[in-house]
Amino acid sequence: MTNTDVLIIGAGHNGLVCACYLAEAGLNVRLVERRNVVGGAAVTEEFHPGFHNSVASYTVSLLNPKVIDDLDLYNYGLTVVERDISNFYPLGTNDGEYLKLFFEMDRTQEAFEQFSKADAAALPSYYDAIGKAADVIRDLVLETPPNAGGGLDDILRAIKMGNRFRKLTVDDQQSILDLFTKSAAEFLARWFENPTIAAAFAFDGIVGAYASPHTPGTAYVLLHHAFGEVNGKKGRWGHAIGGMGAITQAMRRVAENRGVEITTDAAVERVIIENDRAVGVVLENGETLKARSIVSNIGPKLLFTKLVDADAQPPAFNERMHHLACGSGTFRMNVALSELPNFSCLPSDSASEHHRSGIIIGPTIDYLDRAYLDARQHGWSREPIIEMLIPSTMDDSLAPDGQHVASLFCQQVAPVLPDGRSWDQAREEVADLVIDTVNKYAPNFKASVLGKQILSPLDLERIFGLTSGDIFHGRLSLDQMFSSRPALGSADYRTPIAGLYICGSGTHPGGGVTGAPGHNAAREILKDFKKNRLPTLS
Image (cartoon, rainbow, N blue to C red; front, side):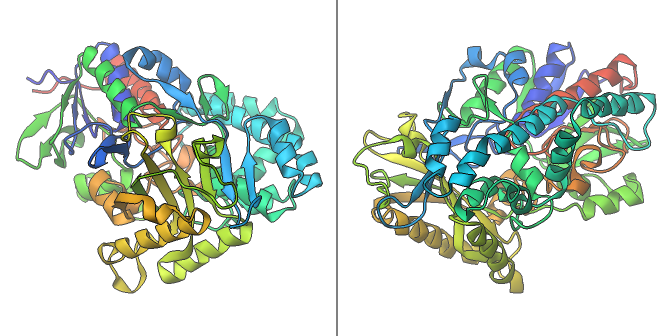
């Protein structure tokens, strides 16, 4: 007779969070991970001798404060420091051609006045609209969405959530509706006329979306990146000392302290379904593991097209999973640097506040739009959109003295290249293009590169199991959000197969290192255990 109550597939951060909550409630939890390290895409590794960096996910903001507190992560080794400023946008190669976004509104308004006094004056109104919408989303992040066609519990959840919206003014309700349905460009045009200022905000609308800023729905992607906080301060961005792996290593220590058994190098080949119920898994090494319930932290599309037999799924659900939109259009690089980038528009001999921010190359709305159109036709943008972070300016554990590491997060590459080309053939060419693009703004950059790690969409899929390189485990669009994430009827972290649950970013509230899906799924799983819906297996 098995003594495992819950077996979790995938030790990414949401799998670890889910395991911690379930074990704290007294369940016997086992977690199996395909790779030789826990953390999923939130890991820190040495990618060049002496240089370490967050390999895939790379910045802190969305990690939920309740999860941090419940898991006591700060007492298990996690330290998060804030960026000096939010973002820096080099706009050209001449002195003074740049824009900075600050965490303080008055400083940002002062920066905007160089481009548009009207836009500077409109900033408080814009922040007010975003702030109110972000507060609503924060309230929903740790809620289980009501299931379409569900029972009384789902009806009550829908009423409770509807009451929150009814308390808002009609104008605020309209802003939230606009955020869920409009494009980032259209939403921003209500406040801003300058194309550079609009692009500064629109960037967050196309991150991980593989879309133009004119694509309907990108306004919500913008909002999704706005509801985070760092050390109790809303809208801030930060860095975990030791990289993103410090988060998941702290989570691992919590899980093990609570009695979770974690096994690495344990890839799952298939989920065992008996009598219409998930009862275990078969590992690629042939070992069979049984449990009263199975929880998947991998993407829903990967789970239901690769690990669960089609015959065990309702046909309509199986079809939905096969056609789930995946592919965030991202290309990720880590580079080892002999020195800091020296930007022509803002020369500096040492680390300055702009080096400790998000450095974004994407100067106008038209630039962002062209990049997407170019990628659709060519396979990648020949003028790429790049966000660069230099975490070693805040964390000297990542690089040798006097040297640095940089994360390059590039948007607008096709998840699957046209004309049958493989990313294995194109990855070096695109990596060179990215480095050359940064070098246009910081002419010492290319010569300072000592080594690099390249992660194309195909690499992200192979290494981390991100289908088509999708960092969100599925597109954040209206048809794949909230009660329809990943499908109508499965928004409550339960699947059509009894005893099989999902807890990853492919569920509400979506992608990013939040811990919220793991938190929410654990709550629903515990409800089923308390109601004796999960029998003991022999």
